[in-house]
Length: 268
View 1 (spheres, rainbow, N blue to C red):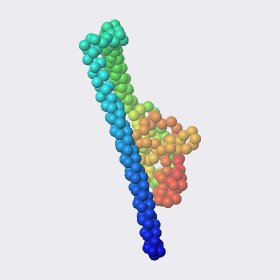
View 2: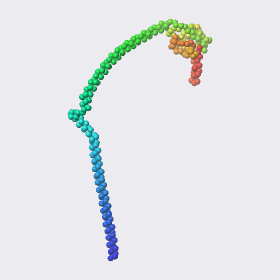
View 3: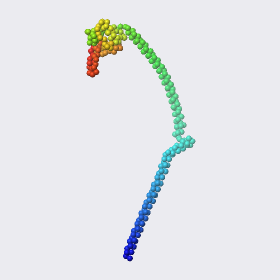
View 4: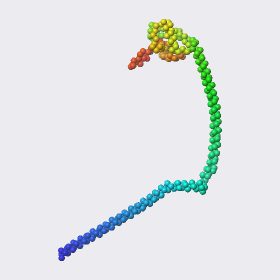
């Protein structure tokens, strides 16, 4: 009996523990279900709120995109139908625009008249300018003809005589210094012509000399600073101011260090 009593007590305790465990599980299950229900309700409420937001956003977008066009269309239809009259528009169309059109037309007519007057004045000025230019060109042509005629007259006329001092260092082949001349020169004689006359005079006097390879005697003129400068062959003799001289031919210049030797030019 004691053993049965002990077993009964043990079974009773185990049954009670099992019942307590089942009750705890039931409580946990109920709580878990309540949590799921609450979460579901929250999700439904959030989804409902999202739907409301979407509807509001769509409504705002619709208003921004379509409402201005609709209002503009309604406004234009009412204005065109004459049901709505805008005072400012009526004043502009009925009073300001007619005055503006008339003022612009008058201004355009005045501008057109001014342009015609300016065109007439410019035409007269251009005509007079062309006449003046033609007269001036004719006058210049006449002056040129007179100058050419004067030069033609001077070409054959003797206007002076010159003498040229030539040293034996300046012209190869001379045995001593020589005074060439006097030589007759005309108003059209150039440096080249004068050099040719010098050569002819030397040949006529049977003076022995060596003609430079380039055919010129390298005439030069001494300036106020005492420096002798070479002359161009086509320069007129009458345009030369200073004492004429024959330059010593330039020595050959080496490729390196020959600049100082080239500058050592002697004149007579």
